[in-house]
Each structure stands twice: as structure tokens, then as C-alpha cells.
Image 1: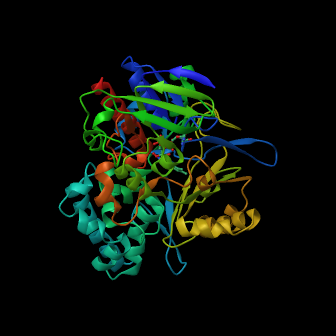
Image 2: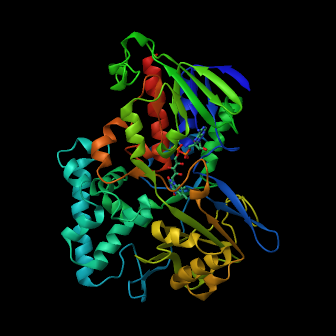
Image 3: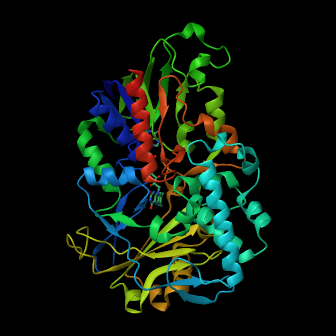
Amino acid sequence: RLEIERDVVVIGAGPAGLMAARTLKKAGRSVAVLEARPRVGGRTWNGKVADAQGREHFIEIGGQWISPDQTRLIELVDELGLETFPRYREGTSIYVSPDGTRHEYEGTTFPASEKTQAEMDQLIATLDQLAAEIGAEEPWAHPKAAELDAISFREWLKQQSDDQEAIDNVSIYVASGMLTKPSHTFSTLQAVLMAASAGSFSNLVDEDFILDRRVEGGMQSVSLKLAEELGEDVILDSPVRTLEWATPDESTADPLNHVPADVRNGVDNDGGPGSVTACSDRAVVRARYAVLAVPPNLYERISYVPPLPREQQIVHQHLSMGLVIKVHAVYETPFWREEGLSGTGFGGGRLVQEVYDNTNYGANFAGGQAGQEDPFGTLVGFVSDVYAEQMWKLSPQERQHAILSAMADYLGPKTMEPIAFYLSDMAAEEWTRGAYATSYDLGGLSRWGHLQNQPTGPIHYACSDIAAEGYQHVDGAIRQGEIAAQRIIERG
Ligand code: FAD
């Protein structure tokens, strides 16, 4: 194994870890980034799928869209010399109502009955108000935090409205659409955080806003470019198994926690950073600080010596991954466009609750040319939470048939005949274990949220899942990486 000494060891080469390393290096600190996988990018991943003729089509297995509020990511994309392109959205969209009826509509408002629409508007307005009042920075500190964290989003919606369709539609935006958990499993405070982090609940509802642009060459290109800058400081195939850490003044250690009280509370102690030793499969890195840039559900995959303080050990157990399968279906042409359809489809409570045109732009794989749209058409669909679980029980053929049939409810029978089909299920990935991100169980955010960003002695945490702005998104990961690096730089 390599033996390395650096100022800071970063664990995880997703967008958060790479951004932390870049910021530290620019400030003159030496870094090493240890990454478990044989690639960088974490939950962003450029892939390809071959058709029967052996032509390879570009797909984005993980995160891909950027919304206009994600300003830090937009700046970074520009700084790295990457281009973006807008999601195709011309033409009519499809809404499938609970009774299975298919409706065509324009704009971003579902064609529900007038009463349902009025109920939805009312719910959205109330959630907008809560998001503005509570904000994304410290939702746990708001006077209404405990009350809103004690009630599931589903129960809260039921208290506000007796219109089932309105409840189902509004819940999609956060439940299957974002946290990828059923709406009875997370709190209203958690839903408000999701909305506040994107600017408002109305922004979550507006797919033209939330799914605005993509990076030419794929979102993983952001991480690939950052890693290129870092060069040999990024070490792949190196899962960190053990993290030894010490604070400078062991004599003040609390016998219950082995950690001085001021460090436990996230306050720097006078003696400076202490030290860390990260032991991975390929390298042992000794440093003054560590940035733990992995999703919170994986924190406990690492053995800490000594153990982390009790507060952190408890917090980590209340954060769990959502579950969603992302589906790509590739066609010879974007046939739906010829029929005047945008490719967008929604249906609350259906196997595939969202479908979009995901046709590529630029020279990636088969047919694509720089500055031009790919001639092949691609659709992307999402199978969320309990529906994803149902899919596990099927054979690959049955699964493909069930998902394509559900997509055909929106875009017609031609949807059943893709030339290539790919399912990405990060629940099967050892170094992610779900998608899109982690969130708290009922009551967890108000109780434990204030601790999630507190450093433990020399260990700082950075991940999209503990972000305020850009929460659960690449933008939040980038911001978190920068914040962790900045805090370390300030500590000296
Ligand atoms: P990650 O990307 O998870 O990176 C963490 C890294 O740590 C990984 O590379 C992992 O391998 C590594 N690691 C874990 N444990 C260890 C260990 N012990 N030792 C060393 N390394 C370790 N976001 C958007 O902005 N827009 C979208 O459209 C979008 N869609 C998504 C679709 C899917 C299917 C998924 C899965 C995510 C999506 N996201 C989207 C979310 C986005 O991808 C994440 O928010 C972002 O990647 C988080 O970055 P991160 O660096 O915090 O964590």
C-alpha cells in the first residue's frame, strides 16, 4: 500500500469531495482523495448502452439536470469550460389521471378538474409560504420545526385537503419526485426543506424550472474535469476502511466519548486540528484533517478509531437513502415529437410516474456531433419507492415489459419498441445503496439536523445530502465541498 502524507485527506471522489480537494489545493493545502470505486463522480455517471447493431448510445446513469437556482454549479460548469443544453419541451404533455384516462395538456399545470386544481393551488401556496418562512439553512431551528417534523407529509396534506387527486399530485413533487420515499415515511418539515432548498415549492412543481438544462457530455464531466485538475492526488479503487483520528489534547477527553466537549459541540479547541490516518485498500494517508465526502448512509461503513462521539453515531442512523430506478429507452428517432408531443408525461400513483425527452446533444456516442442534437431519440422514466421494489421481484424481461407498458400509457405503442433499454438502480451499488439521496426519518430533521454539519475534531462532513441550497443535488454537493474546505482553511 502507498504511504502518503498530506494536509487533508478527502474520502470520496463525488462532486463534493472533488470540489473540497480543488478548493483546498487552490489555497495551498496538499490533498489526497481516496475513492472506493474505479471511477470518479459518485452518483453522477456517464454510461452507454448498445443496440442490436452494436451502436453505442450515451446515457446518464445518475444525476443530470441543472435548475436556474443552482448558481454555484452553473458557475463551475462554465469555469470548467463545459457547455449546457436545454431539455426538449416543445409540444403537448400527457397527464394520466388516477382512473387511467390520458389527457393532453400545455404548460406545467396538470389538466385536473377545476376543484382539484384549486385545491392543488391552495396546497402549493401554503407550502410556498412555509418554505419562505423556514428556509433551507436551519429548518430545525424554526419555532414550527418540531410540530412539522412530527407529522408525515401525507397526513399533513390530508389535514389540508379532502381532494385525493390533489393530495396525490402534490405529494409526487417531493415523495416519488425528489426524496423517492412514500409520503407517509418523511415529515412535512423534510418536504419544506426540499422546497426551500430549490427556492420554493412552486419551483419543484415547474418541471421547466427544475429539469431545465443538462451538461453536454454528461454531468459526470464536472467530476472528471475536477479529477483531471487534481491528477495523481485522486486514488481510485481505494475504499477507506478505517479512519483513525485524534484531537490534540487527549487529557480533556470525556471518558464516555473519548472526545473533548468543545470538539463534540463542533467548536475548535485551542490545540489545533489534531491528526487523522485514513487506511484504504490501496493507500494509507496521514493528514491533519479529513473531509468525509460520502453519503451519510455510508458513514458507518468506516471503522473510526476512536469511535465517533455518540451524537454523530445517532444522527447517522436516522438518515436513509430513497429508492428509484432510472430508465433509459432509446429509439431510432424521437417519434413523439412527430406527433406534437414534448415527451413529458405525469401520473400520480402509476408505475412510471414521470417520463421526459432525454435526447442527447453533442458528440458522445453513435450519431452525435458536437453542437448538434443526437438523431436518436431517448426517453427517461422514473420508477420510484414502492414501485421500484415491485420491479425487483420480476425477471429482467418482465421488468422491461412492465416499465415500457407504463411509459406507453403516456406516449403510445411505439414506446414499446426501443432499440436499446437500460435500467439504473443505484440500490444495487455498494458505494451508494439507493437513490437519489438520503433524508431523515420522521422527526429526525428537527432532532438531529443541527449536528449533521458539525465537524468531529479533525473530521469535516461534506455531501449533497446535508446541504441547504441544492440539497440532494450536485449543486448542493459542490457547495458543501467548498464550505468544508473553507472551514479547514480557516482553522489553519
Ligand atoms: P456522491 O456522488 O455519492 O459521491 C460520494 C463518493 O464517495 C462516491 O464516489 C463513492 O464511491 C465514494 N465512497 C463511498 N464510501 C467510500 C469509502 N468508504 N471510501 C472511499 N470512497 C467512498 N442531482 C442533480 O443535481 N440533478 C439530477 O438530475 C439528479 N438526478 C439523479 C439521478 C440519480 C439516479 C441519482 C442516483 C442521483 C441524482 N442526483 C441528481 C443527485 C446527485 O447525483 C447527488 O446529489 C450528487 O452526486 C452527490 O454528490 P456527493 O459528492 O455528495 O456524493
